[in-house]
Length: 157
Image (spheres, rainbow, N blue to C red):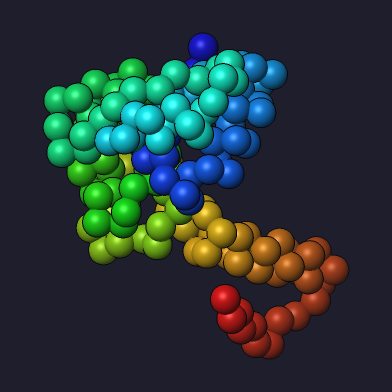
């Protein structure tokens, strides 16, 4: 069974965890939620099946790498400053990584390496940033499908 690792169970992770748990059993994947506050992670998962919860101190590199190596996809819901060590581990261990945060310079510099390893590192996959980009892309595709022309585009979020 494929495993999705969610690192960080703070407020911004609530909807993600709910969504993943709604689909886990039906779509055939398991969810592992880790946070430094294991009680917070337990609270987010509740008594729903399809998920396991563990405590993780993100600064504990060996523990962090163990969770990442046991997963297929890693979703970092940590504060932006903490994504880079996770990204380096994902690159080293051959794991895909998603985050809701903006693309940092550090992670941008990993682009050629993750592409060379056929890994997907996606940033800006949240509400803001994220949904604004996805909505804009859909609108642009619809205009292009109708052979329309875009002379200017602005987005304010």
